[in-house]
Length: 371
Ligand SMILES: Cc1ncc(COP(=O)(O)O)c(C=O)c1O
Image (cartoon, rainbow, N blue to C red; front, side):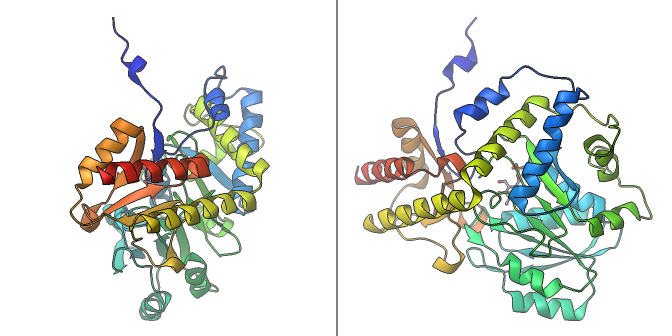
């Protein structure tokens, strides 16, 4: 019988995620599986929590990987905090802000949204106006909007919320491990991420951190968290405390992989990791400029790890991406929503952010476009 897996080839992942994975992370995935209550695995869990606290720059005790992808992290944050009719403000300038709005609406929240043009950042003054009109339980924003390549001013929005009861919820799926995320200093109460972007681990876990203040709100709910699997109060009993209480069977090998990818980032030094992303981004922008290709986002709000570029006039979007995939073994991303057919998204996330990869994608693009 032919084994389908024999056909899996190595593709240079330069799209919006997943990103390339270091060999040592693949090796971690292949280690022997331990039991989910095994004392050695529990030691590894404790180390994962500490490494996540380091990468997120937080002291929050409740800092754990949720079993599920980034969207499970999003669901966890909203489902634990929202009770019916809670006023929530979602700041939207791309697909993932829209997804937050959908999740919060499904939970019966009283959702207001403030929308900004795709490719431009959230404007803090507009948020301030909204905050003057209404007391929100939660304000939520995406730090790195993967659908457009925009970095939103998370720190400035955090300043607007300082001293208020409002909880600040931030999506760091694409930013964590690629640019600075300073959860405590920026006043973020709840934060989620994913493993497959700048942490350079396969998709499958969603790091989440909850401040003590937000945990008090969760523990003081009038109604039960309507989702058993993602209930933080139950998860804390498995991930923390003196005696661990079984909740669900943790994906052991994915946790090994996450441990190893966090270990690599911390060992390299976060500042060095951020610099590597920025240098690769600058090199890519210069090379694209030489090819006559322009960036979508203005320099002040560009993400180094997600580069949205205008598709040159008269060029077939899908054909170029398909040739990059088949002839050069490179994946880049298409535009989404109103940007479909207008932009490509080139990812420089985690282990992908290396100069040889920038050279490779520029050379391949030049060849495909010249033909
Ligand atoms: C900013 C952002 N938030 C949330 C998600 C959802 O994560 P996942 O696809 O891992 O469920 C993504 C995925 O690309 C993302 O980029």
